[in-house]
Image (tube, rainbow, N blue to C red; front, side, top):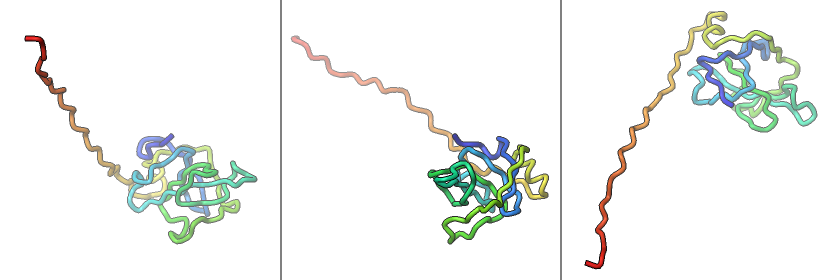
Length: 133
């Protein structure tokens, strides 16, 4: 299931001592505001529900997705070990509330909605009737 980061509430968390937003749902990467960063938290085979690694994107052992106003790992690094540096709260916030709380500019929803053209009415095709006459 995917989440709308501009309307839905996400959970406030801290990762590597930085304030972030977390969701167990998927965040489509093309919806991430410019200048923001989006990562997946993954568990391990032994502890599938405990965050072990931060990666750019994953479907294997994925726990959830993190949205951050700052970079949390180097672009050249494949994964970053979490090592008990992830703290989640019970508070939920919208992206706008999170930005207001941290004194950040609220990103504008830049997604483009391209209306689908209306379908044309079916064309009536007359076929020549073949008969004995």
